[in-house]
Amino acid sequence: MAVKIFMLFVFFGLMIAIGWYSRHQARTVEGYVLGGRSVGPWISAFAYGTSYFSAVVFVGYAGQFGWKYGLASTWIGIGNAFIGSLLAWVILGRRTRVMTKHLNSATMPAFFESRYKSSTLKIVASAIIFIFLIPYTASVYNGLSNLFEMAFGIPYIYCVIMMAALTCVYVLLGGYTATVYNDFVQGIIMLVGIVAVILAVLNGHGGFLEAVKSLSTIPSDNPVTAGQQGAFASFFGPDPMGLMYVIILTSLGTWGLPQMVQKFYAIKSEKAVATGTIVSTFFAVVIAGGSYFLGGFARLIDVEKVSRVAEDGTIAMMYDHVIFSWACSSFSSCRLPCQRCPPWSSRPARH
Image 1 (tube, rainbow, N blue to C red):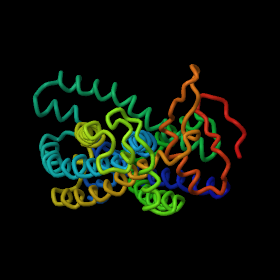
Image 2 (cartoon, rainbow, N blue to C red):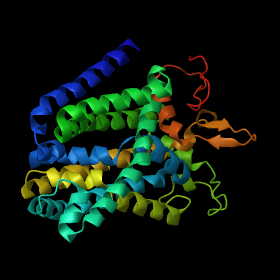
Image 3 (cartoon, one colour):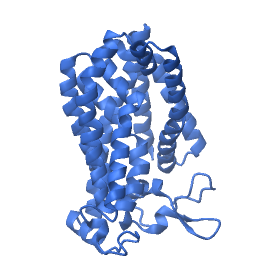
Image 4 (cartoon, rainbow, N blue to C red):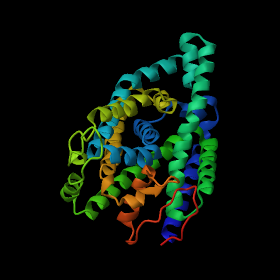
């Protein structure tokens, strides 16, 4: 625990230090919102990737879709990498940078107003962003807070407040520049972390082949396969059509997210877009592919660790706890049954 707390404070201190260091870039509106349109390709690519693959993917989607589709959920990560990242950079990257610079637009609503000569469109776009980014942001904070609650035993509400306050400090200090540099640091941590967890999980189940073999012995409870055995270890999983819809939804949906598209506004040159395309795609392959690959082994976890008994006596799955359980069982010496509970319930004594 002492080591974890020390590393946590080092990380927090680094985030605030980056905000303080970046404050000179935030002296103008364009500097605060876009970093002066001088952000390098690697920083832009990592910022795009960390905005794309946040706690929503690590905590929620990887566990839920991994449980539903098995190893075939890895296709979601591949689709995210090549459709949601590579194709987005190729089609939107250069064009977006050139147009927004030509129109001197710093935000998506401002771009719509300048491009279509409509202040009404600007207001509508602003309202849509304001309304629908609230649940998105809430889901990110929920995932982060659950993770900190598990690791440090801090009550959920305090984790939310702490995360929000920390983000507020470095964003107010350094604006966009502080955000993208912090994203770069976080991206490195994500790359190392996902590789470490995957290796630990596979090692804990006798290696890759043994883990796949164990997964293949589980019969599918999906009506589409009528109980076909081995569906969760198959190439396209128990529900190929459903899998395809998820790939399209999670890959194309990001093309319109303002926090994603704005990364193209700030990149320093058209030449940098080409480098950013390659780096962003590699990042997505490792992070998204690794997350969904890890989630594909979800059914090897003891169901009691990722479920709870609802008030009506039925078993309710807690998909957000799948990745938590992997991390806990892979890196902890504890071998007792997991005592994880929903954040809204009272907490049991920890083992």
